[in-house]
Length: 453
RNA sequence: GCGAUUGUAGCUCAGUUGGUUAGAGCGCCGGUUUGUGGUACCGGAGGUCGAGGGUUCGAACCCCUUCAAUCGCCCCA
Image 1 (cartoon, rainbow, N blue to C red):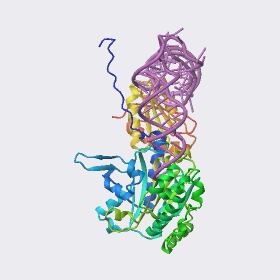
Image 2: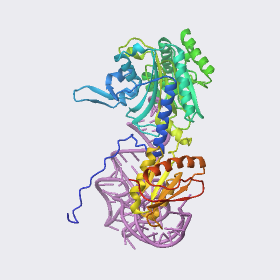
Image 3: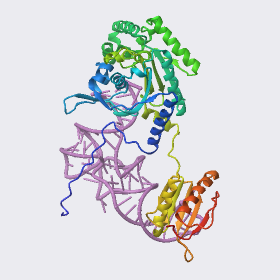
Image 4: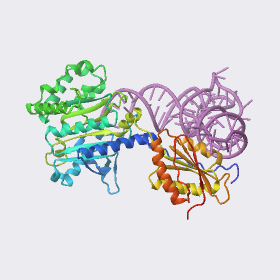
């Protein structure tokens, strides 16, 4: 190739907008959220479900409502090679409901289900809002009693507390009433807002036809004066719906879960009834909802199933992980041992020592490449509890290597626990004459006579 | 889908009014020093200034388009 001819430039494909590559401490925070959820859902005896990432488009369009933003403009839908319209799941609940019907899970009812994984919505990305995002999800299907709502809420409360992020997060609670209450309230809201339509914001004028409940939580100052005097759900609740909500709030109080009534709290999706709730923080800007859900007694019928009461919630793992990271709750775990080879001929032995220690459950990084004199400094930067240095300086005849041990931890018991593992491993790998101990603040030298076979 | 801000080395950022071969710190690689070691010093690699087009004798800088991130709206977990 001549100098004037440049090789064709190979362009690196960009990551898809709204997707993330999560690494290091952020990935640890993410894993921490999932691990805590997995632990707690077992305590509450929720059964693990693995779900397909895509479904027939009708699973979502029928259950969420054709007019919702999620269905009308945010779904990743495509035709497969057979001409079927499929959609990457934008939420868990609809797919779980479909699975409940098609797999005959009625036989387990009431069944408590938990899952987590990626979801997809074509939205404008922002902090805490991605096109591929991840949720943990818990549902109780086939339980009509308010105790199911309460169990889910107490479980969510426990999760947030165990993640160490409950401070500054409040549980906002509302009821949408049963189907009849909800419809009556909705009709009253439309009638009320229609009288003031000209004074409402453009967004709310649009919402009036599509989703009038949403006007209630509008942030536009032009809407505020009217939302204050808008019809209240409490005036439209049937006595059954009132009793239901009273039982939920009473049981929450008994369980010691703090909540506030949020009469303007509504759900975006059509299938919700009765209890609606959000755990909200002011620490994530516009994406303040950290966990949300409610009761969806109408959903199963929209998918052709028998009427089936159900409640559930979902929480954004990224949002929880951000709060966990901000609270300084998660660090990558500290390295136990760094093994440093300070002679090229000992690199293999250093690796062998490392492998042996790892088989004993000790975390190890081996440094056996690069400039010999800079390896110790590299080891220090890894911040291990112990550094093991192998070198061959000043060896007497027949000797194989020197081993030096330096403790970087102030916790002596950690070091001595590790010493047992190290000694055992050394005895497997090398002939060692004297037993040794590791003492804090002191380095020990050990002569190794020859490698074991 | 709408509005605003930002985009320069692996990372964090300088870069004057448009003017030589685009810089620093950290990180990375190598060397010297130190020698029970984490220091200091020296050197090196690494950039089509997000991308494409335009204006100009000359563009990281001005204009247009586009991509992306961030903040808000919308929506939602």
